[in-house]
Length: 368
Image (cartoon, rainbow, N blue to C red; front, side, top):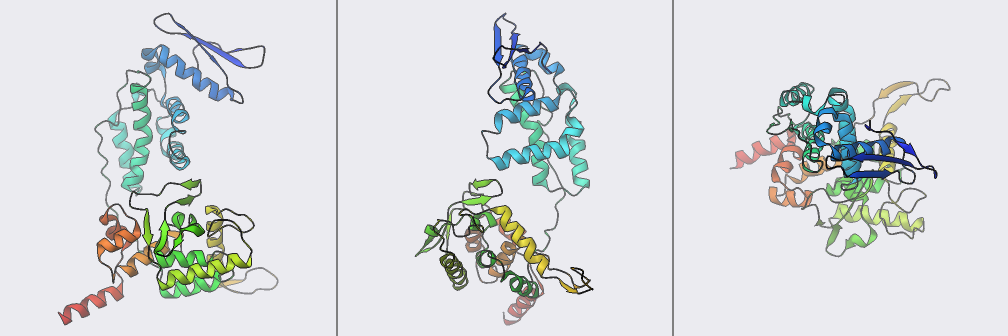
């Protein structure tokens, strides 16, 4: 909370005054539409700038994080800002939110990492959690001039490696899925994912002008937060127009022609000219639910479950493509098609060996 009183002006706006250590008077006025809580955070920040030593002593981490995210959420993508807010709320706030900055130590950070490791968190996600602590501390020291010690300095994130879970879609699940998908406007979207291994956001970001004679140009993505930059520097690529790709594209173009669509996107949502990641996810859930087989019981919607629904996520199409393509492509070729920055990502997390692959390897060794 601000150390001085917040006054109210005649026009309804709020005003706050603070004096720095040199005796200079500073005044803040609330902005149009600004809530009292947001104005209080700006007043807290002014207090810190006027008296850094006092701020370092009295400020708790929860307030520091709110001040930091308010400044930085306009400098990063909406998705990155949401991740920082989410990890703070879920894993940091209850643990460190009420602690003063001087009370948080490297031992506390290591204890947090130990708990995350025991819960099975990945190294990348643990890194996001630590970043939500490290960056506010760095900002407080560098931009606010607070005399604080960053508890994350020198902390090494060592999480146990987890064996990647096989997410390859088997032939029977694929058949059942697309049999149910024939009633969905997203059928050809999922067929294209399986034929290309594109990230779901990349396929959703395709426009009609991206279909060129030399292939499918991948230059943008659509996430749940709207337009997004591509995930890696190598994600900008041209995917060849294989038979399966052409088949999926032609079918989607025919659908758009029947609907007399005049927009620029390849996979617009129903009744709207623009694509939507939540709409695609909702369509996937409906298709998956439709793969279940039920034995009717009276007038109820469902009776006895005879065959459970298939288990498929949007990224499973990408894993399946990579695993199948790895049988005929060199690793460097597959890395290009997947748009991966590192070939280790391609081989470690996307290529899975099944019984068929092992059998083919044995036959190849016998021939050798």
